[in-house]
Length: 622
Image 1: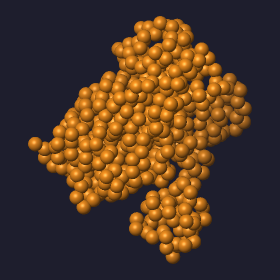
Image 2: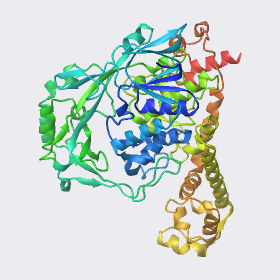
Image 3: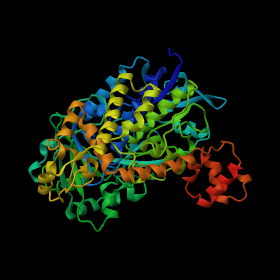
Image 4: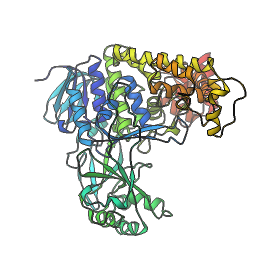
């Protein structure tokens, strides 16, 4: 019935979709097995993509040739660039999406890939021979063979849904959980643990008094995620702000004795940075209100997502509290919030390619590794799909460094540090975030995507033009001067000190109140250069960031270059750390467990001291 495949991807969520697409587009014969083909890449929680650091990840996925950014652009209903009041390292794109259109476009995109097949089923076991993967077994008793398998099971592994005192099996509401696979993997030597996540009520927008809420429109000039020629939004839907109150909190507290979070029913660890409303009330008891975001689910849907009101309290308690929120007095809901517990496998059991250390050819990606968020999952799926294809074709593995991408930070953190709560990305996790901006993701990663084959020659040529134009524009600013009579009237309006002699354009641009757009129309040589070279707004923006923050960028690049020296010192996987008696006992134990590939990776293992690393460097250099 089934042919032998190069790669089998288990799970059709964000990680599975990116993994299957990448591997198939690179030339592998891929089979995607999922519970329900109608819910591929479904937005199980909030209908949005991006946000702080997450937006950077999506732009990196796009720069490498992944598809999440393109699908987001085609399904978005609102765009906002977050943190514009801060430096450009913190600027993060975020989009509200049409939940249904997002999933539909993903499926249509996958169906257009000739070497990608689909099968609706549940994988309950893997097939191995001499510790090498050879396929999977499904709940229908079918054995399907392959050279590699990527598990992207999300929250479905022994998923258990909680609402008040009630709990029942499920991967998400209305869909069955996956049983059998965890137990079979544990029998093969893997370690498994439990985590928890949750989701809020879904609201009927017709029952909300929006006049009592604070409108939150999209940006006046919306941007997009993909570096390709996807279209810009011409119209947008607004989100709305609401607030809880002490009265709302008091009603919610009445249900705490029935909360699975507080009764001990839920054993899994939940996300610290996206807590349930009852958890927020308990942890931040000094706060008399909490902010809520009412987000539309699509262009034509009356359904809204109440971001910030995740809960596993009984339905009647959730509903009673909602009705006390200003603007929600007559609210109707489509379904209550709920919590879900599920199995995950500590990611310290993986190599940096996301291949498991126990079984060659078996990869884990997404929430199965203890992460949370569509973006983190998609990034892992992309890298697992790439590396599985590279492995079976005996091609070089692709491992992004911490100074190259947020994706590199994400995977490095997972493998070296593990997780003790659902992992989500933050800009603060990246030491080199000035280098890892959302605007320069293409400069950093598109050459890698093109070399792999995920970026077409046509797209790479367009990228090369943009890159060359940026260099030329920087040179123009550094070599061209402006005379006082060209800009002093404008500087006076801005309450800036006037020029007394001609000054390099690059120096003028260092002033905080001055931007390139301010200067266009006032400096003819600049206007002529932009017009003659057909410089895009994106190129203008990137050049301005580089010029304004060049000192910081250079300093951070120097720090990254020093790190490269450590990254290049290779450690053999079978290295005997117990033979180095001058290492601390904790260092010997952790190095033996984690098996870092380089000194750089070893230096980021929790518990290793600088002196341990120095001893290791000296020993290896001998």
